[in-house]
View 1: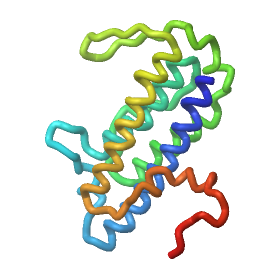
View 2: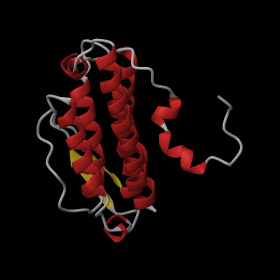
View 3: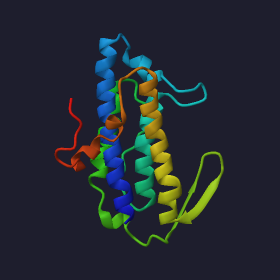
View 4: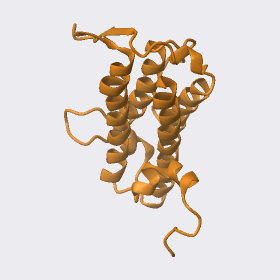
Length: 178
């Protein structure tokens, strides 16, 4: 159950983010917006820039899976400095997620999961509560922040870019014309 709620969602979201970055890079070239402008862009002065949001999106997927029992995670210590680096972080995370054994995550959903934050706060909860109340909200926060930065910079993204993986479920004959 926990595997199904996490790993496939992380894979879907990171693949969509990779596509958004590809679209942003191409759009930026056509509109004289360089990689460094995107990398440093942020939604508000007190928020992290795009490079951090991408790393945090990857990191949240990695943290959740490792806290639930997966091993061998890649280390993403620093923000990427260009789009190739952003894509490399996503690719490394996706490659690792694809190796996770379902059994490593799907133990007892009531087992204890605890973690400490750098500011000294410590949390204790069940594995299921951790996924619902911490792991998923944290992951999607950073994924949406990255999407929001790209939109803020003018990249013509829409909901279909955010949930591009949903096209696999589209009922034939129901796509809008045009």
